[in-house]
Length: 528
Ligand code: FAD
Ligand code: NAP
Image (cartoon, rainbow, N blue to C red; front, side, top):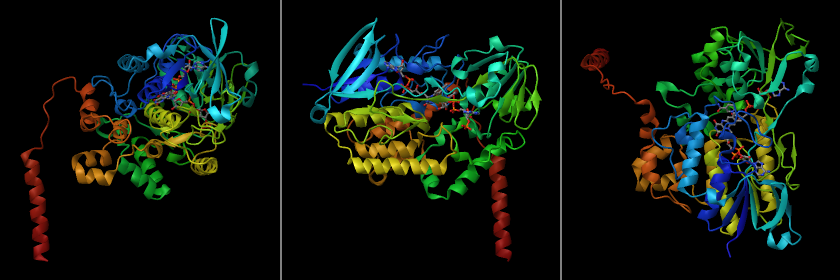
């Protein structure tokens, strides 16, 4: 009999969870509390209880080749950085292609999952759901929790004196949808994560003045990297090798010099005390343009609000404030599962997925990571691993080994990152993918590749570490993986090459000039 798996949520993680279960001969049933797939990426004008909510203009900051599922590349004509509507289209193509929707029960809320009395021998769960006001409990052999972690607003009003007396409007970024309603207003945006940056930039085009308040500043990266390539296509195995080998201070210095070359973070009042790799990446191509145009003014933390003004920690005052947007991030919790304990966004899960103390490993949390890269391929490789653990093909290490791994990870995180409730589940894309791939048996063997397929080895080592690399070998091997890797640059370039342009070739004069330099040097050396 096929093992039954409950998948909770039908967003980017839930969809791939269904597919991975099917690939491994498991029987998935996905429960989605809303009426459609896509999770956070399905924009709605009004935020919904229990589902993450985005603003209308959100453009993803991870590029299409890096965020694609590993055996279903994003169509070549889709832009590198997609608007949320395009991302939803991709998820729909994926769901249609692998016929996933028939496994989803929509408008079904999971209320509770609990171990069955015989859990120690069966590993089974009671899953209680609610649909149309009717509750039901069913038995499942395993559970994949795919509910995301951007649903509950972190709204620290208590930290802002006087906010309750403020007569203007104040809201969390979760409730921000579009800029029109703030036209002509003086607005403060609090927090300089990706939401704060995006919202400040967007508002600055119609508001009369935007103040971007940050308690510690931020390094700002560009989506568009050198020569117009997507920034994250620099995430090669070679880059990660350097990052993990060279002293951290060197890597930080190189990164900071690079971003400061675009604009000096000190001159733009953004320079933080921490180093560039000690924060979750903040990606914003427009922020320096808006700051230099004066439409965004960077301020320090607000110490107090009055009825109409804000007093900042440097004792400057901004009067006649109309609105305050708290882009202060999110918290997460699992109220329907008492086994998973979360405190201040801290949770003890092996590889951010498994509870070491469970007698049977039949529960996994998917997508509970904040990567330096895209979440989708991470959710996918997590699901591939979880599915094989559920079938018994793979085993996890002992509880004590898992706990030690958790302890080390926490220690590393504390050492590297600024202490903040937003830095508790950080992972580096390639390192983490490789960790899971190793457990799953799908990590590419570079030495073997070099001997058998040097061209591919070159692309795998020095090219972007795209998700297809994890389909070259081992369980779930995909015969098109090699070709998809070798054509990834074509797909990245296709969407911007929309007009015929004659490729410029270097002028013969340049060659003559270079030849001249060589001759002069040779002459000098010979003369000496
Ligand atoms: P979600 O997309 O949040 O989906 C969870 C689903 O679970 C929802 O459909 C919800 O309705 C359902 N659900 C929740 N609870 C229950 C329940 N009890 N019962 C039944 N169903 C339930 N990530 C990137 O990789 N790149 C980016 O550039 C990026 N940009 C982002 C921009 C914003 C503004 C935000 C907020 C996040 C961004 N993220 C980005 C992170 C984002 O969380 C992931 O891209 C992705 O949406 C995670 O998918 P998920 O399926 O894990 O969670
Ligand atoms: P976030 O990354 O958690 O950032 C929250 C910001 O608020 C930080 O600057 C934080 O400062 C600040 N903050 C929190 N509590 C505060 C307090 N009490 N006082 C003052 N400042 C406070 O949240 P987010 O920006 O909403 O991003 C959430 C996730 O969505 C991230 O993964 C992000 O990458 C993603 N996202 C992506 C896009 C995109 O792709 N375009 C857009 C938006 C969001 P500290 O650092 O000091 O704690």
